[in-house]
Structures are given as C-alpha cells and as structure tokens.
Length: 228
Figure 1 (cartoon, one colour):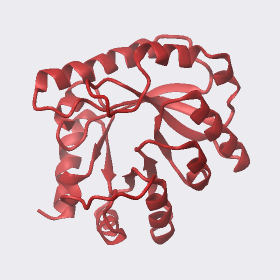
Figure 2 (cartoon, one colour; figure 1 turned 90 degrees about the vertical axis):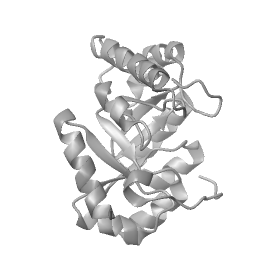
Figure 3 (cartoon, rainbow, N blue to C red; figure 1 turned 120 degrees about the vertical axis):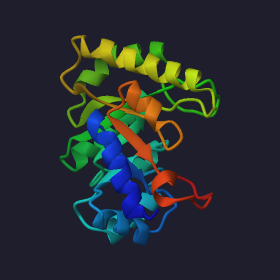
Figure 4 (cartoon, helix red, strand yellow; figure 1 turned 60 degrees about the horizontal axis):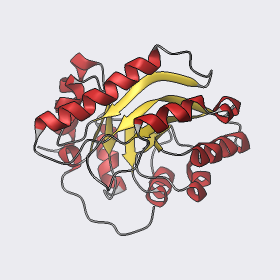
C-alpha cells in the first residue's frame, strides 16, 4: 500500500473515535510529506528541530507542524514562529522558554505536558506527582504566551497488551481528573496524545484524541544520529 492508501486507512479507523492523525515524518524526505499532503493530510510530527525547520521551509504554508520529540530549551527559538503544537513539555524551565519565545513573536504557543507512564528508563516526562506540582506552581499562571492543551504519554515498548492498556488508562484517568479541577486560565485539557504505529488501537480504545503514526504510513525510516 502507498502513502495515500495508508492515510485513507487511518482516517477511516480514526473517524469513529474523533481522533486526529499526526503523520510522523521524521527522517523521511520532503517528497514523501508532499505525497501525504496531496492525499489530504495536514498535520505532521517531527522529532528533531533542525529537520522540522528545514522541511517547513520547503513545504506548503498550511501544514501543521507538531514537535513530538524531546525539546532542548536552546532550540525553542527556531520553531516558535511556526510550530502548531509542542507535545513534549517536561519541565518548568522549558515552558518558561516557550513563553519567552511566544512573547518575542507575539504568538500563543500550544503545548502538551509529557507524562512518564512507561516502565522504561529511556522515556522523558513528568511523573504523576510532578504533574500536579507543575500545574499548581505559581509561575505557570503568569505565562501569557503558552496554552497547555492537554497531555502526552508513551507506553512501554512491549508486546504485553495488558501492560500497554494499563499505562494508557492511567494517563486517561489523570487527564479526566484534571478536567474536573479549577485549572489556570492558560490550561485547556482538550487533547490526549497517546499511541503510535504499534499500539494506536489500544490508545484509541483508552481515549486518545491524537495518534502519532510514522512507520505505518511512510514505511521504515532511516536512522538519524543528528542532534535535536
């Protein structure tokens, strides 16, 4: 199946859930993104800042660019003018920098807080205790140029479906709890970004509003060692 057919397949599968498809284009060339764009796809996810900036300059202006990988503070300035959503906010220092760059460009930058739900040491994110402390921190209320739109989580890379489901379910429960709280005005618990090519169906069943699909759309990717 080609890229167009893959996108149509996922659109059909996601429609009953009302979830958005993030086509993860990391390491894939602009030509493949263009093919997906011509098939009607508009939201693309990248892991590395340099790669996102290069592709953004080559492609149509109405693409939505989502930064889904770990983001270093000194790289925020490069994507601030055009990024549509940053999925991977995992520290107050990073959110502070995003707010500064948003102010610089007079643009409110939408973000998700990345929550650590996996049983692996390789994943970034806040644990549940840190998440609640983060939201209650006084400085968060002062950030006028960020909008925290929800949460993002990555499950353990395992074939144990029960474990994956438990991890996604735990994040959904916290997401639902936060929606019931009186949150700062720059918070809007609307999006729950969970699920990739290997586990998106479980994520959808557990309430994901965004799935991040790369390999199942574009095929296997080249390994990149460039810094983010």
